[in-house]
Length: 349
Ligand code: SF4
Image 1: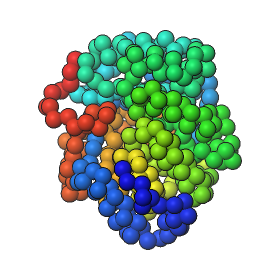
Image 2: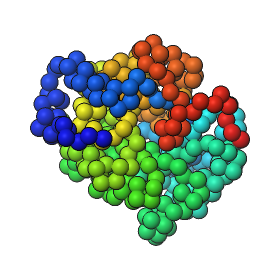
Image 3: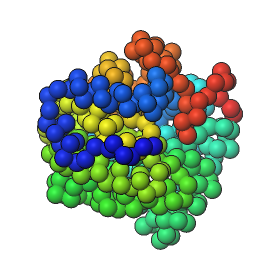
Image 4: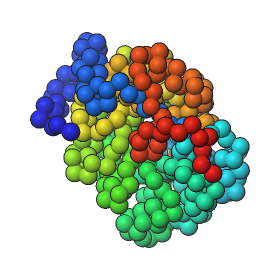
C-alpha cells in the first residue's frame, strides 16, 4: 500500500478534535473505497469462551471470575466440540477466554487439534496476546516455540484483544493486571514472524486522551510497517458497566474514531465495525466512515455482553447481508484470511 500521503500524528489530533465528522468520514470512505471497493466482508463465525476463570481479574472486565466464585465455568474439549456440533453453519471458530490457573499449553493445543480434526476446513482464530503471553510464561518456552506448537495444532489467525490502550499512565489505572502495551506488541511481532496474521484493537472512551489514542495507532502503524501481519483493526468502544464507571461513547465519537483509524492506519487492509458493540444501524453507517468489515454472525458473544452491550448476541447470515446491501455495498463472505468463500456448503466436516 502507498505510504507517501500518510497522515501525521499532528493531523490525526486535529481530526480527533474536529466536529466536522462528514468531511473526515468522506475522506476515510474514499481511502476505504480505494482499498476494498464496495466490498464489505463478514464471516460466519462462532465464539467460544472456554473458561471465564482468570488469574488476572482486570478491573474493567465483567466477564472473568475467580475459581470457585459463583458463575465461574470451564469447558472441557469435549464440551466445546459438542457446542460446535449443535451450532449453525460456520466458517471460523473464534476462541478467547480467561487465563486459567491450571491449563498448560498442551490443553490449548489439544483444543485446537480436536476442533481441526472434527471440523475439516474450518478456520480457527484464537487467543489474545494476553493468553499467549500466559502460555509462554507457564510453558517457559520462547514465543517462537509457543507459536510453532499452536500453529502446528491448527491455529490460523489471532484476534487483536488485550491491546486496550498502550499508554502506560492510562493502562496503570485501567488494567494494571494485564500485560504491558510493549509486551502486547512483542507477542504480535512474534506471531507475525511465525507467519500468523492477527487483528489489532484499541479500547477507547474511558480514561484516555486523543493523544493517547494517536500514540496507540502510531505503534500499530509502525509494527505493521515492519511485519505486515495485521489483517484488520477494530476500535472497541468502552462499555461502562464495570467497576471503572464512565459513560457510553456517542455515535459521532464512534464514527470519528473509525474514520481517523482508517486514515491513520493506511497500511492495515481492513477496518472492522464491530456490530456487537456498535449495534446494527451505527455499524451500517460506519461503512460510510471507512469500515469495510462487519465481523460476523458471532454466535453467542459473551464478553461484551457481560460488560453491558445491549445488542443481540448473534445475527443471522441473511440479516447481516441485508444490512450490508441496504447500505449500498456488496457483502463478501470471507474465510479467516479474507479470501472470498463462494461455496454454499454448510461447512466442511
Ligand atoms: S480481560 Fe482477559 S485477562 Fe483480563 S480478566 Fe478479563 S479475561 Fe482475564
